[in-house]
Image (tube, rainbow, N blue to C red):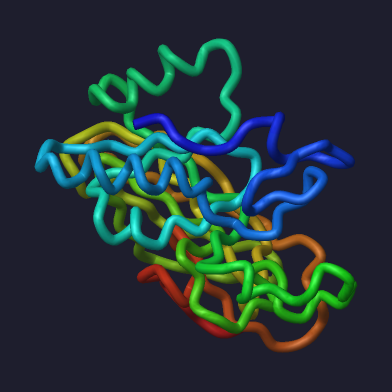
Length: 226
């Protein structure tokens, strides 16, 4: 099921008069109700369902997250979208993307739009429980981490594809909870690589260094102190 939003709904200074939208701004971050109703109706048929999302901003897909077995975030993917999505759905390509934003459970989790302070916003300052955290993403394979070493601003770690399918992993390095570096690598099934990363814009002082396939709070990362 291909669901989501469009540039006709989300934007700026737009004449949009439907529930959840006001002048191009969003008053809710759910899917439009008609789409939610259709997804729930199709799910009752008992057939395997994959939900493909086409959208430009985060969505609160709480019911779908609990009840739909597979969800692909495709964003606004352009003219080659059909082939690319089909390759992922049929297993001809192993996805390795990670979320560049936080997916919240509700617009109520966010500060008022008129509040320009950063408290409560983005993965750095959000204190609630996200629907999907920044940096989250799945693969048809699995990855293991070992031998974390830190020397000044340089970090090295060995990453192994522990599954049976070749795939990409996005290695994420966090310093005291803030993303300090990342690198995407390709590993064949069973292959290991030692990856070097350099921490940039690191503030002076002691830091907790964490490396893995996601944020330290939501992923089994390797962690040490510097």
